[in-house]
Length: 410
Length: 222
Image 1 (cartoon, each protein chain N blue to C red):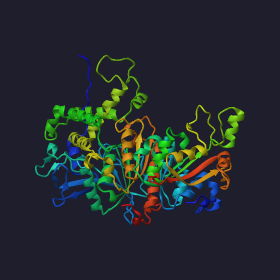
Image 2: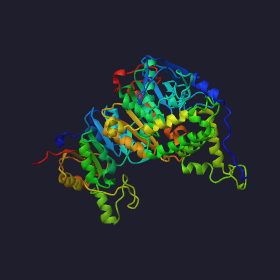
Image 3: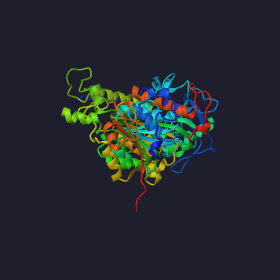
Image 4: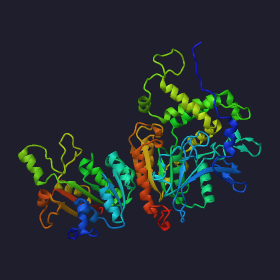
């Protein structure tokens, strides 16, 4: 028989992940039955919890808070070692002392999204009614639901106005939702590599991923934990497909070309002959170590439903009417998942609302993932935007000085 | 506003700081009322916007070149990547007090449409452009027999971005044709000094190296 290699079983036990979902290695804000999260699907979710991380100090005026919204498969561990993978935080090159999101100047918060699997309530969390994981009994959540939950967290932390909301990809969608839902609470916004809606192509790729998960016999209609299995093959395939969309053709070619993996000649099998295959398999198998399959279904769905214009009579500019928030929109030339044209449509709508907006397209061949990588131009732009907004907000150079709350637009 | 009101140096800027700024930028900045909202179309590296913001003016910019935009944004300026020819249509009527087109008109594909858009988006427009009627330009064509090149416009005819050159006289005629009112007009000589006002138009057209115009919509004639 022709040699076949499939995705190896994950080494992390599902119990460890289940434990992290309920008892995260993070700060946790718990909301009781008296404070339900009102979801777009009509369900009042209660009780629920939000896992979050903070960096830096909140100043006396509570005016230096920055909220980071994370992307689809990332989490609140922005700038600390990840409790499950042991790897550095996903934005350690952006958040830290002397970095654009300077923890000496700003109080930085990042919360795991509702529907996630790193400690905020989601399908991997225990359903208090049954004592078992929610699984598919978890209500479908949306980007506005995620933002509503974050707003409740900020209320809990006593933060009225955010100095800035920052995020890329699904995080950028949340940034935009923040400015639409709570414009008076957002002094400035830095949405990156995102769009005001998910395109048909975006939805198509997500559907592919979901079907891959659900086609795995280990999925068991979402009840894999009780069956002591994991749909790791399906989830890995979903990740492999998605990962291709995060890179560009040029980046893949530069990184791998047609080079062979540890061999000189093809093996005439379905082994991973090519480096690019080996890389994708690694991406797939490492992903299942840290991410919950059901959570992947829910979060991709939330992105699919996102469409700001649809919520405003089909007119995007109407969503931003009269907005005082300062915007800096950033896109990347080789990002074909959230192409510059989407950012430009957003900028046109913001211009039509006379919003104060900066828009930079950064030239790079690194695709959608560029916002997470070491792209100096992106760092310079983020830093410049935040410094200018900080001046307008009355933040001192230390960030802990006096604030001009009276000067805020909101 | 009467033509006689103009004067250099400009109000609000200490003379010793003039050296830091381009003369035409100072002239343009002097035409903008403090506290107003301004769109700078073709804002380059954002020098004029920085000058305006230093005077408490709410400035926004559009720039075609990605490098220019990114440098502006890194300076904290509200600048978007865009094209004067195609992107002005996205701005609503009367969104700004002033729209500035500084040394960019000659590089647009449709100068007339651009000019009309400037005065749709802004209550007023400030337009500056190199004057192709300047005597050195005329001399190069007349005597040298080649397309003019100057210190400010060094590109050759085949690689220049400037595709719609005009003279001050041409521009005045365009303003008349599309019912635009000239509130102030200044011609700057080779050294950036204003050409004396009491001289006739043909002198401006001959000795002005560039023209700077403050425009508004003329009253609609019935």
